[in-house]
Image (cartoon, rainbow, N blue to C red):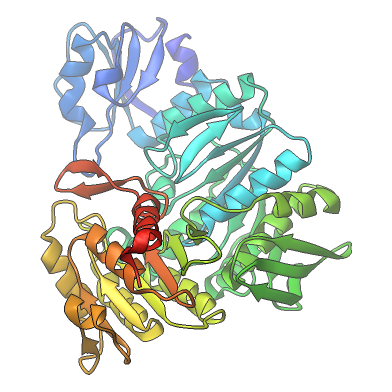
Length: 505
């Protein structure tokens, strides 16, 4: 493609060289450059792409797009200075791949919690209605029977536009995209034209990056204010941040929630360990839905998906069948145990609010005790650690603090920072205390995650509930800078197998 065409609508501040030639592709990783590539130098959190210009040129890059004023040039390359490299990358990718988001129905899901479940629900509804659907999200990227590992919740803009074009070429008509706050702030979604934008909720998360809830909210708000052409905003009308969002955006909006004032609501529902039965009230009347998913927070996710589907004009019968067809979402309150065993769930909850919601919902079905195994990731928001400790200790009969993905932090320091949030009067048990039985609420610390899970499952009675929280669908554990195979669901199944062979209580 002609470089001059690629540069259409990009704020170019200066050019060194001839821009009349052809470009073979777009890249922001010098290792992916080839002959006649356009290399876009981006300053990231760990690396600055401007430091890799020479490497990009050695690999064949012909055109260098940058936003630093003082940069060493290479004689064999054309240098194009722009106002913002990240914005330029999104525009270049959009131009190179022919504005793919314009050719599909694009639905973005943003918010702190629920994005993945809402995406799965919408995918199921759309597939039930006969549409070919693609999804990009935390668990994976998928379309047309193809499954790809997810490097980020939302891919980098050049990868995103490329994938959208590949989806369209494969016959995809609708794309559901989880949109993270990082993706919004780092302009990964720049150039995408969304038809629907869903706001699930907002609670403290990523404050190591955003610093304050106000900044976090303003980034989320930009998804609805900066989208080209605007989109229909489907907003949680029961969430205070959602209410504020509705006051501040100009987009056409639809609200969902339990309140009578919401456009899509449910005030008549039953929740059990077997799932959800509810009547959903929409603009065209009331209809029943049933789901195998557990908990009131999942009813909110169902309402979000239903409201988005109604906004697309999808008939009630397909909304009902799509919701019913989705039995589970990987790592989202996913039940791993059998009916004759303790109810063991694996969930991705890794914030205080998410953990609180899960435990409050499980408490409604409590017949015995609740045992929670959880930790906090290293090199991430430290402010949530004591909060999660307080939540787990308060809402569980036994909270077992363990490692999550410690990364480059000292695991013991993370555990200590979690413990700070627990009431000093709480019982602190040792493994020996627990094995011999306990009658009062308390907590314990076991640094090794496998050992913690095995202990929780082994001491649980058949009327107890065990929640293993934090990692959800992940099949690895990050220690230092290395990934090791580790899947909570696999470890739980092994522990349950040990019980069946006589190793449990």
